[in-house]
Length: 172
Image (cartoon, helix red, strand yellow):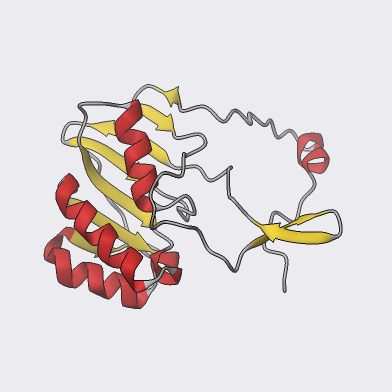
């Protein structure tokens, strides 16, 4: 086991001028830019990564990643959802954004989907839901993994881009 959390103490960061806003709410942080806050887990097939833990006293508990955030940018073509690692689940996150911003289509999803660690059935159901939701562009990175990324590229063709270091995307 290895620790994969933030190596810095909050107090040390605040001592250097950092300010924290730990609200769990979906909110607008700049005109047309929102953060998701805590994402409800409703999908039956997005169960999280069983290999990730959080220390609680003298034991390790599965990490629920309640602090998993994504960003939403409003644009001419619809919403762009920018993911970090999407530990909440891609479909859970899409549903949360749709609930909070009804009537606004999610046009683009970019970032890590954590599908590289997901069971095949989760990937299959995610693909079906992305089709149903008519997401137009997918920009995949890091934790999507090559096999899941290749499967998404095979399913969605030119709508998929691999967004690693140096990739740029124009949001309309």
